Length: 275
Image (cartoon, rainbow, N blue to C red):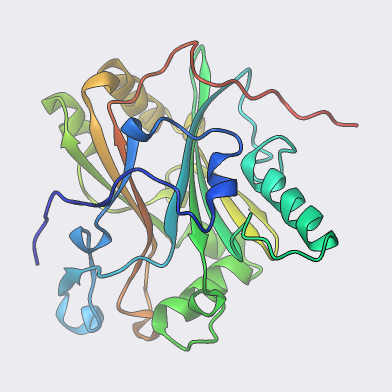
């Protein structure tokens, strides 16, 4: 059980789901990649008995796009339903192709979206898109512990359960000591610290983390932004397995953000029209 600083792949979108990854243009490929999910440490199959953690193995979702965008104010209604953003564009493309009797891989069967709201004088959204190519891995039908937990989290009715289950594992791969100390590497249940919003359909789920809802989180972000151009940050997203039937834990998706730059050259997203 050990950490290996290795990227599973270069920053890329797969050929299969290239449309959703490229419309609109994603963050530059030099700015992100998908780290090896097996490098994250999660609760093992007998964690409730022995407290042992293990390397995570493969992830459920595959990282297909990363956006960092400017906004006039936080868009808490979500990027997944925004008419000019990638999920709605991909679903429209899929609809058009099917109307012509053609097969379309414009959108995956399901997309899980993590949307981190970065508050400040200039507000940003950092948005990570994970493709799920096999629905049985999240709807409980393959009868694995992780699939049963995903089914309850994604398709269940309880936002309280979602608040208490979504977990983030942070990791500063390169960065200033102050940032390393402030961010740490301890897994955190985000919904107990921040306000989370959810957008759910049968084709996608978006989880919105409002960092402006916590003074502590906002302070850590302000510190991190001051050193952003020197940082390489890994984030692993997963669902906490409390019950034995949901163990071992499995990484849903992970991302590496490299030397992020925040400025006026970043793509701007306008608030969608209410009409």
